Image (cartoon, rainbow, N blue to C red; front, side, top):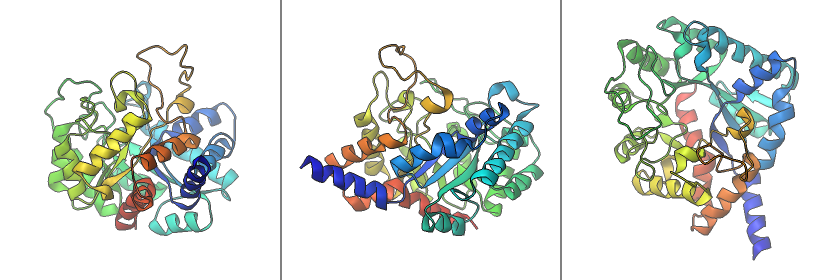
Length: 343
């Protein structure tokens, strides 16, 4: 029976399209290239992608506090420039996703597709014309905020304390409208609740939360309420489950707790609106992964990188998820959004 299960899991990872809707990949690439390293994706990340069966990776453009506000634009361009250098070096192995045709090309040719997305529009400052320039550079996702304020909106907190009531600014409304016009995907992960509901008032396309979990199971503002989950589903959008321990559960978080979020999303939104957005941090940011020396309040990846997605697959099978539902969760739901929006 165990051998049959292993073969079943292996078949899923070899034959299903797996999309991870959030990884701080370019943060790592740009940092390492600045030190003189090359072929970062091919050397450090591609083996893990392949071992876990990942096909499409959404890389954030994530800017740390020390570069904001003045150097946010510079740092975003540095990250994109570093990615173009990676394409020059490893273009036969990675595919830059700028359209749905690119998605199909990556899958048909067994390349790793990489799509770029803002994690906070901080690099734009308050200049809407820059959005078009980033679109021309290949950015296709618009995460409006990280968990802080920018010119577009307020981010949510990581605590139980209720967020500020400020919604989208006029500039934030312009960002949503212009992004949809260009063919960019609106991402509400990290956005505060007032801003979220403002997005829902003006959006005309599917909206995603690339890496968020359920507030009903873990009551922090970083997670989504049932009402928010239903609203995303109503746009035909997708919520990518987040594997960072502090987003999964209070105290000990494990695979079962992460699968509980999938169960809850299924009960509230339905199977067509669940995806993966693991936000793997241990390898990217050098987190301590030794359970014996890890402090109680230290974050860790509940799924230990791409090769460990097999354990989540095993858990979903144990819970009775049929293959057709796992296929939707692992990639098909996000692919539907990409086909709808990407030009």
